Image (cartoon, rainbow, N blue to C red):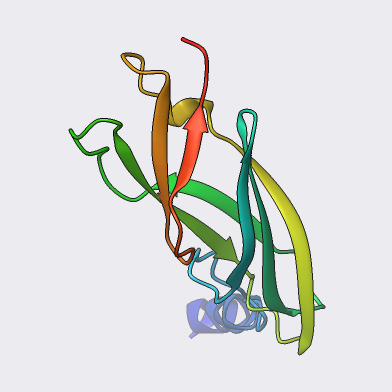
Length: 127
């Protein structure tokens, strides 16, 4: 009986200690690409999303291997982490991403196929 009296407060405190407002750090929050262009070694985009209460993050990732055609075509995806932001404000932001990781060392240019953007983007660089 004594053991139960000692364990009961521990169990109650453990059950109550969890946060009710935990947010999963998923990278699938909705957004739209308003503009996209290549500027030197950067992809510059204007994105639009709903929010206003929490920090948002974007990242540029490969969404597959570059094609073998010349010039090579690299599919890319922008991912958005909205942190469960319940805000309803329509936010427009300019973002820039480094394109150097997507270079083809055998060529001086690559065509970028950005998901959510309907036109190919040509990235020209010195080897």
